[in-house]
Length: 631
Ligand SMILES: [Zn+2]
Image (cartoon, rainbow, N blue to C red; front, side):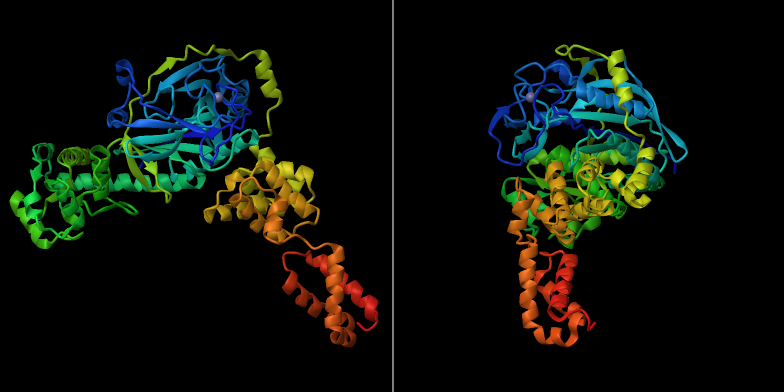
């Protein structure tokens, strides 16, 4: 099956200030300082440009609660003051990336507005600016065109949704993002991963990108021959890209097989369009299904439709964990706001008896080759859900509907909304264009970082890393802090890399938020090891403690965990005491007792002592006591 994949990478930049104001960048997990509420009211002309799904969301009567902290947002984020001129530092980073990707910068940077009505931007639009076009990156003997490189403002951070209220925090709004779009000519899951990681490496060589979950977000466009165009939005982990593409190809293949099956069964659009929505509530008067009973008790109905010739197909698996029936369920919940659906491929079940199913079938005259979908909810919701289901059934006859989907943690995806039309852009009249002068261009050119391939070679040559560790480091978010650490402390490079990659990854897998660790905290940890205040073995535990205890120091961690290293004086005292306790052994065996004493003390002191130092003290003390002659 022929596949075409295009990537759109979004990476937050680590600039000092935000893109259109002087606020610093810091995301807070503490309670916000204050909140304000807004109901977005897009004007008619704006709504003309908005995709139907977003409009639908807007019509649900939603309102927005914005959470504000003065340290990370000002009147600009609140849309009470016009944006300031575009941040030159962000433009410089983007120009650097543009040159590394062989792209041609524009002469003048024009800020444009892209309408968003989900409330993620207080202004009702996102500001974006084209920086360069026409680049490329060579990946495994193939040239991948880079269509555009833009700088744009990040959206406000979605916190939660409670009833009609959507909570956004303004701290993330206005953080500069670089957006890099490749041509859709990637042909396999593996190639998608390689291209994404190669672009990622280029971004990180600038040393000016933010790290942590959410700092990089990738949109993956996947189309297959004869299938549909699917955009998977917001993949946050690089290693997920391969799986996302693989599963999407699988899903499209299976949808095409279902289309062929429907075609073979002679299913026609008219079979679907003319299906009435039927009220089955009477049949379920005394049902033992909790969901249905509760829905009916609160005034709801049990409505359903027959999907002629769909029998057995809804149980088919499209990708791991997603059956064809699941596609109908997500549409029903999106457009009808219902909790779920029942379909005859999985009935009897969920408290619905065989007898009830038989009654439903006989009322509709459905045959074994047909499927029936039931929804129990308020009449209007159930009706909207079933209309969406009929629409999805119609799309099944064509194969793969174009959709925007969201990634699940395992790389499978779920329906988010229909694909929006191309967003029309309007000039941002509040911000003057920025000319890319010769001065700016030359400054960027002269400060161009090493190309990733050269940087990789240097990591091997300068720090003695093997290629695998060097690559791991290049693909991690810690290349920059690694260099800082190595410039300040004398700890083996391999240990530093293993900590920054494997140890932190393991903590992440445990569900620990390692993005809390600042560069200076990480540097401190290695300083403590370097100075002999901490043993290497304790580094993972200390890092974990620092992630769980915000704004604390390495010293605090060592105290709290009771793993401060013993001083030489304390050790000498402990060794002397031990030699007294074990004096028989020492007198009999002399230096040959060394291992035994060592084992005895390490059992008590593990984590609080450098084993080499302890060994040295024991040896010296034994020699002083009984002389070394007997060994
Ligand atoms: Zn601000």
